[in-house]
Every structure is written in structure tokens, then in C-alpha cells.
Image (cartoon, rainbow, N blue to C red; front, side, top):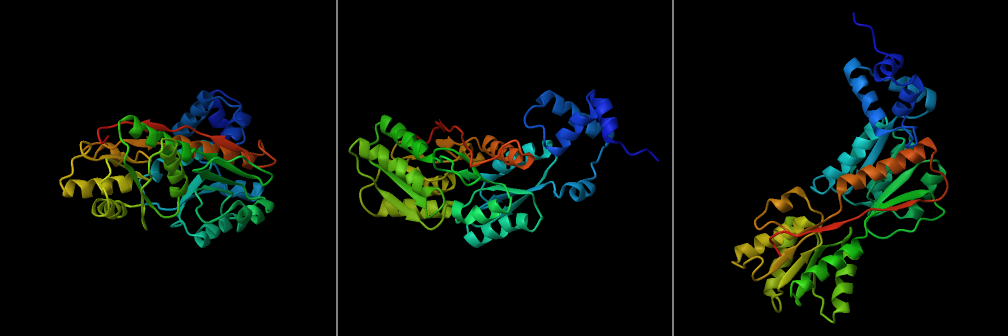
Length: 334
């Protein structure tokens, strides 16, 4: 029988100290270990078939080496890249990740944070539509690290909940101004209820009001293709037809495109369409969809790094904030 590989074997194979291997496996390098070294260690682990004894470690450290990634809708194509970013960073630090779906409901969000209080996961990263930071305070006081992925600007505070955010209000304002620069003065916006729609609507309003242009907003109950199709149909049936439509996410934009094409409305010659999120299908529809990318993989990766820093003690004190960029992706729908 082939002998079981040890940390010492991994260290020898990678040409590093056993202490360095241990730091990488425990996720406690604090960013001080070069990526090239981490890669060598991971290659040695794979080649030797080394398997850390996580049960023994959990008993020794009172850690499960598992993180929870909370998303509101696991079927929404926006989230897989974000989850992949969380998983990539977590696994490199020796953590497993479980992904859970909340439907954006407060009781389900509480349920999954309670998993950490019950000792089933070590920390939680995710998107929370129902819970406020005050709701999270009892968990923070119990020593549970939480990182929120946010759509609005955050400033930090005394409560040790960390935020990684993209300024969706500014992104929506920029997207609206982009359409104005294309010569559009009648721009409508369609959105679902709840979620990030409020900050995206704020950016849309801000851009139009600065130019003295009228806003026209059509809400639907769902951030889905069906919701976008219904909202676009209402816009066409009620009032003057806009020359451009911004959708609060790409799924709604694609649904709106179906409605326009079904009614023989040319895109973008008669009505331009822009979305938000840059999901994979946004570049596959015809015409390809102009949208805003939030670099979801980077967003998830940064959230995981922030959570792991809390877990290994390299970050302490009040909540930290990290702002990440966005970019307008111009395609043929505008």
C-alpha cells in the first residue's frame, strides 16, 4: 500500500517549509505568501494526493473549514461567476464553500446565518435583501464573521460587518448618460421590485433630472425575462413610445427584447435596449445586449478574501469597506 502523504512531504515537494504549507492550508497567510508559492504548494498537494485531516483540525481549532455563500436566486445567471470567485479564493485557503438560496427572504437569510451560530460553518458571505446590519449584530457579537456584497455605497462603522460593493447608483447614472449621448431624450426604465432596483432607479432619475428630462418607470413583480416582457408590453401599450429602455437587470432586458421583436419593433433603430449585470446570454442574444458588468468573479473573490482575513485575525475592529469597479459594455442593442 502506498504510504499516505504528509504535510512534510508536500513541503519537500514544493521546496518550502512545513510551516508555509500549514499557513496556506489554514488560510492564515494574511496575504503574505506569494501566489507563485501557493500555486507550487497546491501542485504538490495534487501530485502527492495529500488530503488534510479536516476532522482533526476542526476538533483542534473549533473550525469547520467551511464557508456559506448566500445568494437570493441560485437560478439567476448573474450569480455563478460570483460564487466561483468565492470558491476559488476559499479553496486556496483550505475552505470548502456551500452555496444556499434565500429567495431574498429575511427568514431564510437568518436561517443560513444561524448555521454559523450552530457551528456548521465558520463564516458567511452573501447578498442580503431582508437583513439589516442591526439584524446581524447578535451574530457579530457571537464572533461570527459576515461579509455583505452590496449594490450601494457603504462607509463602514463600529459593527464588524464588512462590505464589498459596486456603486450601482453611479453605474445606472452613467448608463443613462450613455444613452443620452446617443441622442435619446425619451428613456424609460423597467425594474422588478426589491433587490438592487432602488439604487439603479436612483441613478437613472439623477441622470435624467440633471438634463431636465422626464422619467418613466415601469415596475414588475419579478426580475425575470417574463417580468421584462410584461413591463415592456405595458410601456408600448400605455403612453408615448420611448426611444430607449434601460432594464434593471439583463434578464428583464432580454424579456423586453422578446416583446419588441414580437411586435416588429426594430432594435436599436426604433427602441434601444440596455441591461445590467453582463450575464453570459447578454452577448448571445440578437442583437447583442449593451449592459453594465460588475466583474462578478472579482466581487466574489474579494468578499472571500475579506471573510478569511476576519477568520484568521488579520482584520479586526469595525466594519471595513471595499469598492470595486464596473464598466459599460457597449453592444449592438444600442
